[in-house]
Image 1 (cartoon, rainbow, N blue to C red):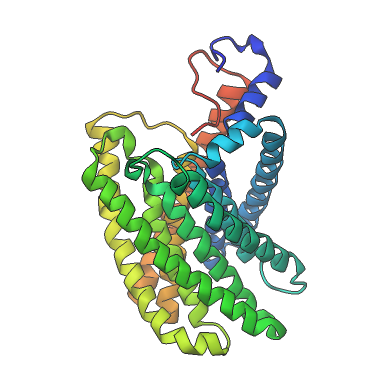
Image 2 (spheres, rainbow, N blue to C red):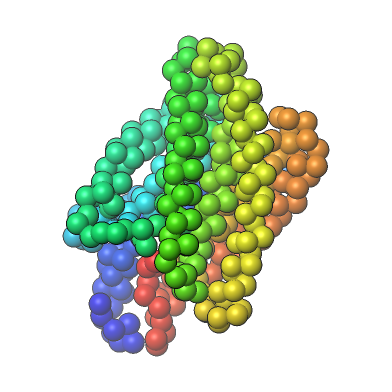
Length: 362
């Protein structure tokens, strides 16, 4: 990699390097912005919610364009990412980002945009779900691979549940497609719940078997909580779906399990906060912008939305009040991270400063 202390390489070269090192998990910025837009919409802040939606769509479009350029110009880097267990699962952020946008755009007529987004997300989820575990984990000669399990693996769970959320939302609006959408919603929710248990085992074993250094406690570990939160949101949407055979057979089970996931996600918050204190205060790991920070903002926003929906669906006013307060936390975290991202991009690509960090890498 070129020495960034020599900005004479030019803006085009720096931009190309930024594209080459672009992390597959950058779509988490769309996920975070989209879910905060949903949270502000639930609070009745229509103008702010609309502005956040525009920003989310803009980031989504830019990242798709950059990803296409990256495949064309830096296909070796793309292949390397797909074979790296620490980066490959970040690809599932595209699935989750697509579904979060679809859920926020709304289901009012016409439904074409939302249906297309669901179709794209579902096809991508199926392809990645069957290929990434093989290319990144099972197909590698290196053994053992337990040390590679980290918080990014939970994004697979988030992708599964995001499809359940969007399918359940559309099921109510499209009577003609009610049965297939109900199947998609319940199946993806069930797969996501199972994957949470499986990934949780792998990550827990990694923490128990291998030493955990401060630099290893990366922000995506927060996705472990975000995955429970989106499972709650998906469950709440399914509970509120119109009658369909698949829904009728699982409604009670999903409602009860959603409460369990909310309780466990709530329990995870203090350890994650303490882990951040241990990393940045006790061991003085610098807190600076990195793409992984969006994986903190998204769980905060999703937890707030999930608590509000669960509290409303199950008539739990305390849970709903907790979710309402959490929305403020998520909005604040989003604003700080968004400003930090803009400053970071300015200082590393547009007007680089000496000793600047590697552009948009993570």
